[in-house]
Every structure is written in structure tokens, then in C-alpha cells.
Amino acid sequence: MTALLEVRDLVKTFGAGEAATHVLRGLSLTLEAGDLAALLGPSGSGKSTLLTILGTLMKPTSGSHRMLGLDLVAADDAALTEFRNRHIGFVFQFHNLLPDFTALENVIFPTAVRAGRETPAARARGRELLVRMGLEARVHFPSAALSGGQKQRVAVARALMNRPELVLADEPTGNLDRASAMQVMALIAEINRDEGTTFLISTHDEKIAAGCHRRIVVGDGLVRDAPT
Image (cartoon, rainbow, N blue to C red; front, side, top):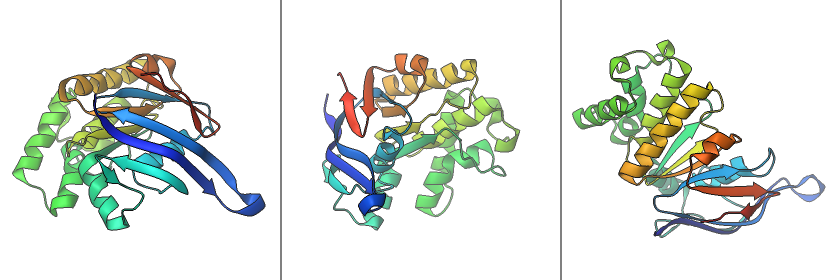
């Protein structure tokens, strides 16, 4: 495998002096292209902060962060926004769909923002993804009319819309029943297998972690175990 992303000696501190909170304490991690990895650790271990930094939504206090050969610590905000839109997809515990938009409109939203308009190619790609998610009959439904599991599948499709190399998922099945959670995980594994998309999935669910190829355990702001 080829390294897609590498962070070295990441430190993230919030506040200063006696009020300082040290969340990441020199964390190092490599993700390989095509990884399907579970990110595990107790609450307060630094998982969410790590995902936020990996997604270029926040910079570390110190340390290096490289993806696709680019130094993302040195990049300015405009470059990070462009990089994030092209190369990184996000799936959150709360799907964050626009309730008045249809499933298709939600999926193509990232591309429409980048292009400044909807295009026939984007609509075709969005529909293709929704069909793959088993939502062919819900393409034009407003997202408010979808079940929780259907909404999360729309969120996965949206994350894949721009064909990102990396998808970061923060507790993506945390609000779903067991059947819906396993269905979403099966779709993620299928995309990983068929398209080679790299996934890093933060979860407390051992069954979700068991569906991944790799486990990365974080504790006290450091990687405690990350077997390949």
C-alpha cells in the first residue's frame, strides 16, 4: 500500500497557562491508500480533535500533517478549503442534511458549491450514488421524509460525491438501530473494496470496528495501538 496521509508528533492544546487543556500530546499516525480503519478510544481520548485536524478543519498547535504529498500545516485557509472539497469527505453522527432539499439535492450540494451551479454530470453522479445506496425510490424525496437509516445513507453518498481519496466518519452509526447501522457499514465496506476509498471511522461500537480491516486505538492524546 501507499501512504495517503501521515501525521507526526501532533500536539493540540486549547487555552494557555493553568487553563491549558492538552488534547493531543505528540500523536503520530499513517493511513495507507485503501485503508478501512476504525478509530477507537474512550471519550476525551482525542479522537474528535484528531478527525477535525485530519479533515483540515483545524490546525495542530505543532507537528506535521501531510496528505497526498502536501504540507497541510503550511497551507493557508483558501488552499485548505479547496483541498478539503476535492479530497476529503465527511460523515457525521448527525447527518446534517438540509431538510427542505431532496435526497439528490443534498448529495450534489458539495459539487454545486464548488461549480457555482448544478450540472447534468453532478445530477447523474448523485443519482448513481443514491441507487448504489439502495435509495432509487427516494431520490426526489425531501430529506425530512426519510428514515434515520436512509438519511445516513444519503450522508454517505454526499461524502462520496466528489470522489474523495479519504472519508472521515465520526460515529456514523451512533444514532441508528442495529440493522440500519450494519447496512450503512456494509455500504462503506463495499465502496472501500470497489473504489479503493480510504475510510477512517471513529466509533465506540465493537461490531462496527470488527467490520474494519484495521484498528487504531487512541488514549491520552496518543496512538496506543495501530496494527497494520
